[in-house]
Length: 250
Ligand code: PEP
Image (cartoon, rainbow, N blue to C red; front, side, top):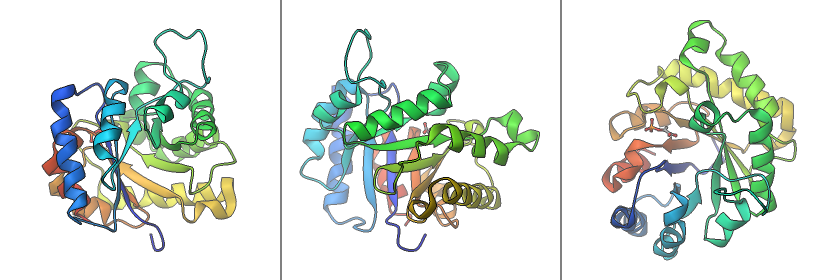
């Protein structure tokens, strides 16, 4: 979208140990060598790696992010991690409402809404994920689902500076399947339209990422679609060469 700097975001999910930090070093070095100064990058890693990831990336243009956060700042929530803790560990961004959180951990729109507010409270950029399931696509409900998720998940104080939307068709995540360019264009145009309805002017410059089986081989086509302002990359973000190749697609 004109006037929007694209962002390529990685999501390592529950993958990565100390040994994986070498890939992160390579990603940082790739961006350092001026690979693509036009593209912004963040890699969201497991909380156990966050502090070291932030340190490794601190001398590069690439930022480190969290994959989820609790809505509260602190307290008796054994095993949980707050947005403030992620910020303290060096995060700049946090993913909220990833479909795996929604599906496997029972998060609804209200939970995602609260987590987005928590991210801003801590000074993090929220990457808010939405997307339809296969059944929803097959019954033609996709655009209605996206509208409902946007209405429910995005606090009205969202701005282009504190929020990034990631459109991730659930059936495309980790499956190797991707929507057609026309389907991506339709979904992203709809999201832009709905964001304008909900947020007014803030919507014009808000980044809308596409996510779901993005690879070096399909990145040029998917990222070239109107209203696609970057990518959220799962599997392919674990390999520096793939992540850098996707970033180069712009
Ligand atoms: C994701 O988990 O956000 C994702 C898009 O995964 P993948 O790229 O592996 O489909």
